[in-house]
Image 1 (cartoon, rainbow, N blue to C red):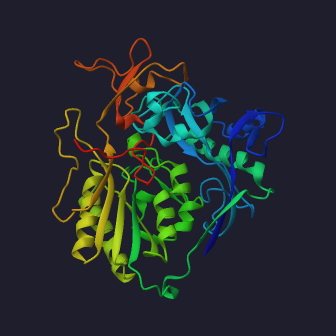
Image 2: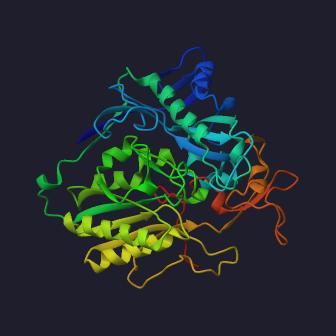
Image 3: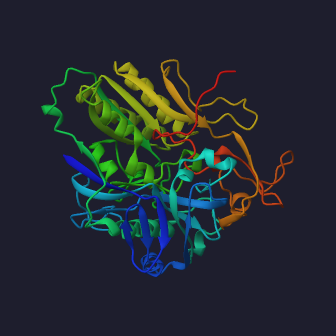
Length: 438
């Protein structure tokens, strides 16, 4: 399976008469773009804004981020979600690099939504402050969930997917500035005298009701058992981010499209390791579901002859049991395993960092502490609704605290847990954080 990404590096974005790209300048016809957004009758209000690295702009509540792309064969960018079911991971896709479509609620936030600061002190906490962003700020008539803690955000998130594909069409017929090529031959044909490595991805899938979880080809990952998947498929639109996990732990759709850990393993393939592929797993609620998924992961790894595995968890808390159980079971099967996750120590820093820990899980990379307190000054411009952080149960925010006061202060400054920083811990592999010794 051979997959090629033709890249175009965006250095500037403007609104103009025609949606086009030329020498780093992306021009967007705003009225056409909004017409694509409003194809869904549930969208009641929508507007587009352009923000850039260093701008004194705060975005919240952020629902998702998507890289603008277009498939040259006319297939939908996200099969099973924005169009018919077709194979991902083959052929040529063109991508506008250095930018993203960021979807923001005009009024209502929820547990799963986050914050992006484009400039100032807050910019260092999230990768998305480094991008030129096309910000869709919109509202819907989905009144049934406006005051729900958990929101599906279906209309807004799918509008972002359509918008990304529309913007990506600007480069459909152009010659790429740079090519990325990913080819994975059948496992049986790979005779490489190097350690065989698999990447196990435990995607967010805890909600038993449909509409909240990560999608694979449009299928709710709560309703699947772990499966073997070609990494090209993940990079090419097979995965769409869910709407449940606390925001700093979240893997956005943009993250799936660009998954740095997958690209790193590809770079080392044939040099230091034999990258066998991805075991796509899930995070469950019931104990028997957790045990079943672990069983499937281990059996696939053994069948594939895996020597070592990297297990990455999207979330924390209850999912820590899935994560640690998988690490232990793989180790018991003789497969050396490294875990990627964040941790939760509580505001006082005294809580056990993972809900379930085990002595055999002795190689874990921590990507951050969701409980870390962050204080940020007012931003000159807020796109979305600042009060959502305190009012709507966004993870990391609160209406009031007897010691810290409200998350949103009268002057527009905020105090919150890292939990609320959009994709802030970047377990996918491009964390902005480092480790210091004290």
